[in-house]
Picture 1: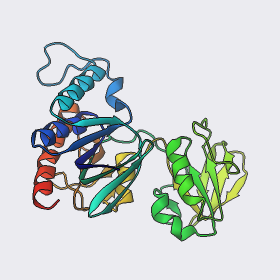
Picture 2: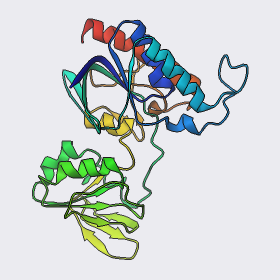
Picture 3: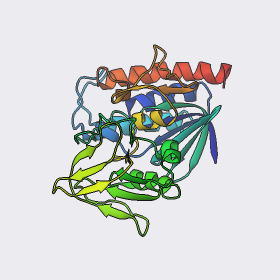
Picture 4: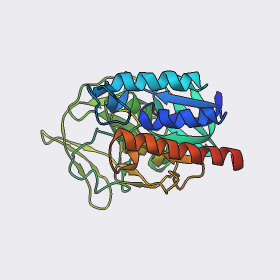
Length: 288
């Protein structure tokens, strides 16, 4: 397992900005990114400090990656599925596991949401966002996972040894990952998540119903809010709650950029990344 002082999840403006500061402070820094994120879709950036001519989002990110590498940061391409905390943090990804004294979540804000009746209302009453956290409560019971990519299959793997049965629901989307043999996969569109006090099942658009005691949501990749929830960090809807130092309520866990809400701009993300880096430097040197 690779060990670092600081691990930054997300290689966008907030994450890379933080990496510049932690690397210059001589902290062993790892930046983990799955892709270029939302910035890759920006063809022309004109409203950012210091740009005499427009630049593409991809070019801006690549330039900053080179800058971070030159300062000593390690950059890897991986998709993080889970994070746990026991004094130090352990992150589990598709390519490997990583450990650090402090972690910055900077993967931006999730653009993937499921507009399904009953889903939000039953959060915490059978709708869960962390299989490894809540699988214990569904021993021998019927559960389902909502998602169609690797993250959903990872959550499914956490449930299979514990639950009585587990199905994968893609909500009408194409399945993009290999599912363990014998697992029921339902690709039909979902109409509603059913239940009054707790989840009792799922009803599909064609009227067919799947009885279930729990529904685990794992849409797309695990975003910053999803990872924060796995270690008990406070969230507000699709944002992570942080203080003025970009710290969460979990010691050593910080967040910056779009995942904290507010003004979704590059300049804001870069500033928050720098502020989070200063806080992580203090934390590692004093408490880590």
